[in-house]
Length: 377
Image (cartoon, one colour):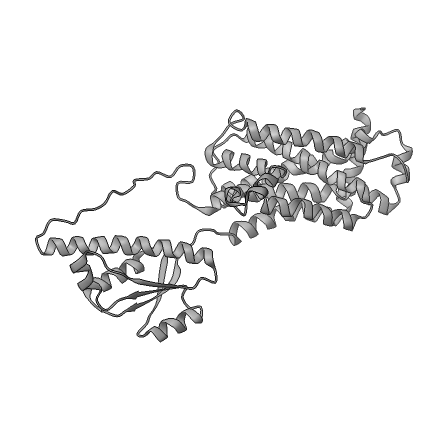
């Protein structure tokens, strides 16, 4: 392979990029749009759930329980109802997602049996929000009931009630349990996959549509030199986009970055080889720019979003789908990014996913090199 020929093809591709406004738009705007939309639009932290309350007793103890809901960051008490019909209308109208109903004998039951029931009515049209809100409600009610029992025992001069064993926990890596810290590495992987495959999916098909393929075929440039020259400009662009995404994630969205920049760019280079090779393979196989672009979009967006662990935990998927995720290179890259951003992992800690990406890069590179034939047939 002669570097002079590779450089000539790369220079030609750079000129094509500068002349093609669509490519420039993908290069410049897609990373910013994806980071902004997903950074602001995707939030898995469920807080300030709108709640309405129905206090059937009206005692000091029941009001203390409802004040615990008002003080919680997980609920926002928007209405106080007078009847069950009002509760039903509030939930039906969507004004609240959960209703807390305190029974008329709450204080008496709590005093006699050291336990009392509180009704929670949930709008489960969004089952995930309903499940999480129910867990929050149980925690608030449990803590408030314990405080009420303690205050009652102190007022009567009795020993405090026996408290069962509780867990003391420490949260590592994402100490504040902020979902954005988990989302940002996934957005970087998504941007790299989309930008890389989308841009290179147009390289060869563009030559067919513009009628310049005959010129390329007649030159002494080999298939390997052509692939290297076509991919090299987009490889540099991909690294620039990675740096751009890193700065947005860390300095704008305040995502933690505890790893090494050299480790990040080394693994990003491997992933770029995979997605650029995939895009080039699609471009060499399909002569239409529109068709190649659409297939590249499907081949990168859906697997990266659904099967990499970005949108859904792989551990919760059915076993056959979990096995399928091993065929998705974004799975390994997303795992690497999470470890670099949140854990500060080095190359030695990431040996397994790096080896998988390297194997993918070799296989995809080989297939991409063999996909283009210097013929007009």
